[in-house]
Amino acid sequence: MTARRILLVIGGGIAAYKSLDLIRRLKERGFSVRAILTAGGAEFVTPLSVATLTGERCFRELFDLTDEHDVGHIRLARDADLVVVAPATADLLAKLANGLANDLASTALLATTAPILAAPAMNPTMWANAATRRNVERLKADGVAFVGPATGLMAERGESGLGRMSEPLDIVAAVEARLGAGASGPLAGKRVLVTSGPTHEPIDPVRVLANRSSGRQGHAIAEAAARAGAAVTLISGPVVIPDPAGVTIVRVETAREMLLAVEAALPADIGVFAAAVADWRTEGAPQKIKKGAGGPPSLALVENPDILATVARRADRPGLLVGFAAETENVVEHAKAKLARKGCDLIVANDVSPESGVMGGDANTVHLVTEDGVESWPPMSKADVAETLVARFAALHGLKK
Ligand code: CTP
Image (cartoon, rainbow, N blue to C red; front, side, top):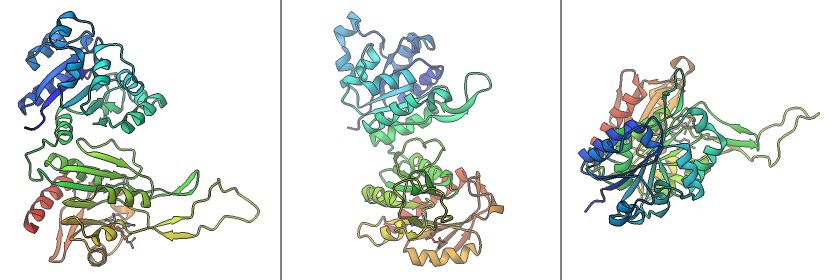
């Protein structure tokens, strides 16, 4: 039987109101949901609403004789296939990162053997705070998965930024991805590997060689593939955009790290190489290079491994291998040459000349180049390009089987 028992921890934030909708959406999809409402959470939503929507008692106190009698916090923690913390406040994340257990929610989080998925929600300044960053990094290292936060307007008037809780449907997608339950959709049961963003190649400890890729297109593809039911691993270079919902993210800096992460993530059914990998690196000086009488240093460049071409040559090459071609001139001709040179099945070519506004922008005009010919699409948002591409990948993968 598929794992479908969710323990939802509702923290104390205004986003708690969205957790009520989250319960509804999970139940619609056949999940059973038990909820722990923290004292802070109860300031925003009532235990009665939680109990009504879950169809279970709303669990609140650590030392509640009735709850302890028939459930107990250890069983509450163990009888779950996944623990979802939504909203995951800065306080809850800090407690979990440090192993504190002084109320029912934090105790259950420590006592569970089930995976944990956190949907952070807090003011952008709190999210950016060094202490929160440390806690999140530690939790990720401990295996806690995250969905969001998203960017947008905050409840506080006039404030916006990264810190909004992800929308309930995005959290549901992350739950399904985590439990391997995204059984519907054209890519259900498929493993998709996506690279995205730039790579940073160190010149010395403080300087890097980089490019202008924002990661928007690759991230949108990863998210669209997850929505289509795939189990997605996104290998991302340094980007500042939010994490897409429902995917496993591996963060890397350099091209060589990206290659290692890609190889570790294989096998996959579909590989989409949207990253703008730096073609060259320097040897990387161990100390900061100082200005001196000798004038500017000359940077000796070394060629980076070609990740896409390397994967194309492997015996466990994904059945459908998609490359991107970022060009500033003769877009289609260069893409055709790249298709052959890289050994992939499809190249998504786009014009990234400064006039096009594609690099860092929201829109994209792409051409699909295969052995059979070229198909040019009208200008679209990167989200629409992602959605349409994923539908095409599903169709092509189906044909190849
Ligand atoms: N790519 C890769 N590893 C590299 C360079 C590129 O995997 N070291 C992938 C990109 O992710 C993309 C495709 O190869 O899918 C084409 O990338 P692009 O930068 O357009 O091509 P290059 O091979 O770098 O060729 P050139 O710079 O000469 O255009």
